[in-house]
Image (cartoon, rainbow, N blue to C red; front, side, top):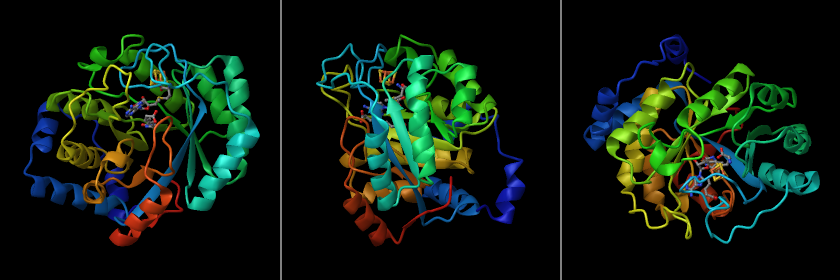
Length: 327
Ligand code: SAM
Ligand code: DTB
Ligand code: SF4
């Protein structure tokens, strides 16, 4: 729930960020940046509350796209096999388990460039079934046409995840099979249909600090801020073109999260992929920087995530509590 000061500020959320001012924020002395991010965070959110989303890969592998980070592209030999869409019972079992563990949102991912209408025939019953459990629903299915977005909205979909991934300038180094504008068009279709937008990116793909700034500028200067902003640390998967990417300094991730928090103060900022490589201390800094959501459960899509028991132990150490409130 927003404080009254925060609700007054809602109308003043900014959509006119410049690259230079975001570069300046990213370069602030660490203590200054943490103080500013934490102050903004406290104006909008309970700082010890964390939203938990669980992921399930409902259609694995065999994707036609060439996203350089992705183990599910058919172009790379990563050992991920191509499967068909999971059935309702399998999905329901996973969703019930996620709910029992404390997750409030269930996110279903499919390795498609864009779904066909007959693909949506299979996804709609999954959304219905998860919704009936009383969980928030999220799907990520690739590019969508406006009519497809409206169909998902009618099925009861709460969130659609579609990431910008990186800056417009660096994008062509990572993906050649669809454009930045294609992604923006899907985001508009989702927004127009009245579905909440989940949109973020990846840190650690060889991008510069200016690229990180421009990813954040692209997100915050959208007509409305995404309700959810996943910040992923690249998971370097063997067989992908980015398997040997230089390791990321975790302070770069913490700074990116802090600046996302300052720029999109009312949004949930999710510390997403990459937590398995991070220490508890680094994750604690991410929470202090304004991350208030995580992917929770032992798997992301094809790669491992920290165990739920480890996450619960970390929350206990930090005095944090999972939220039951929709975000
Ligand atoms: N096929 C759909 C699409 O591309 O929109 C949905 C699934 S796709 C796996 C969703 C997002 O996961 C990507 O946009 C990317 O941001 C993230 N992702 C995929 N592989 C990743 C990796 N190895 N490390 C970090 N993030 C990754
Ligand atoms: C997002 O931003 N990150 C998630 C979710 N949205 C779909 C996916 C992370 C995938 C990490 C690599 C894998 O497990 O395949
Ligand atoms: Fe396909 Fe999505 Fe992976 Fe790109 S990120 S290769 S579109 S599954």
